Image (cartoon, rainbow, N blue to C red):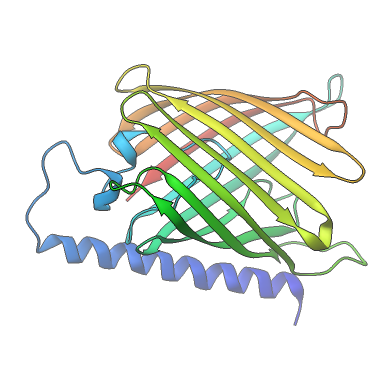
Amino acid sequence: MNGKFFGWSVLCVLTVLVFALGVGRVYAQAGADSPPEDGMKMGDGMEMAHGFPHPFFNHMGIPDSPGMVTTRITGYRQGYSGEESRSDYGFHLEAGLYDRVGLHVRSNAINQNPRTDVMLMYAVVQDAEAESGVSVFGGALVPSGTIPEGQDDVVGAFGVAARKVFKDFAIFDGNVHYMPEMKMVETGVSGVFKATDSLFPIIELEGELSKDETIIYLLPALKFKLKPELFLGVGSQIAVTSDREFDTRALLQIDAAW
């Protein structure tokens, strides 16, 4: 079977399952008592922790609550100084499947990266509110484009992630993501801060480490709450190491949950 067709088939099936899960959750809650006007916290399956948005690219440190679906859709332009920039797109879909178990489907560069991450996350440790904790995750990078000759179509990956919530002040997430076949480690660390009820400054670091190079990007950004569980984000990602795939990247993101 063609690797690209197989990858997109897997993604389509997963997307249908996730949206069916979200719709089922809505109908299940329709017969329950109405929630308070200010919504419920992440642990109740209705709202991200304390109304905060996601980071831009970083994984959350623990899964969403069962039945909750969130998505980040990103458009950007990137390039080297003095050269013409180019556009690309990305998405990050997350869903809470069971208690402590969540699904991640992610591609940060649809045109440039021929694979998409499909991973399951399990919260090994979490607090009573199911907001802070430590998780493990594993899965595969499946083909969603043309795989270079000589490379495996499907690449395994696993890692560990953590999240710490400081109530109405900040949320910190971090993860380490290892791909043995590629002999590569990806890392991410982010802090999302609450300036006002509608304004959230973000600082994020992304890294790629292999035997040949070390790449690190810094991302300062802002997200604006348009309505409960719908945010608009703007940011600029900057290379801080001599090894790099681009110098700067201008970002625009829609961040939503239901």
